[in-house]
Image (tube, rainbow, N blue to C red; front, side, top):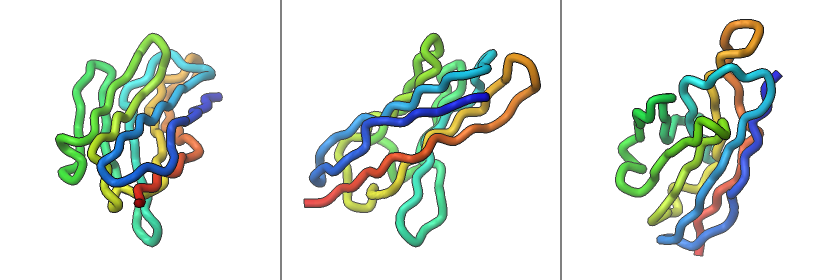
Length: 120
């Protein structure tokens, strides 16, 4: 019904920057919350940043001031600009969207994940 396709991960040195993108497509009427979660090896998945359809944002403390989440509602796309990256930001980053479907209520969807590795 709905697909989320992520892009932009990779290997970057400490202090560097990366931008992740996630485009949603399918039977979408509208999208409420879009978010980026991350999961480091041996750790639980955690919410890194989220944004509502009206642009209200939320960040976990460890990324505040370094990461910026934004979205283009016309394109059903969410972005995560990551600056001043640290080795502890290394994780698989997952896109999440709370979608109001065209024909059958609302449902949450996940992207396939994109690896971000911060290392010298």
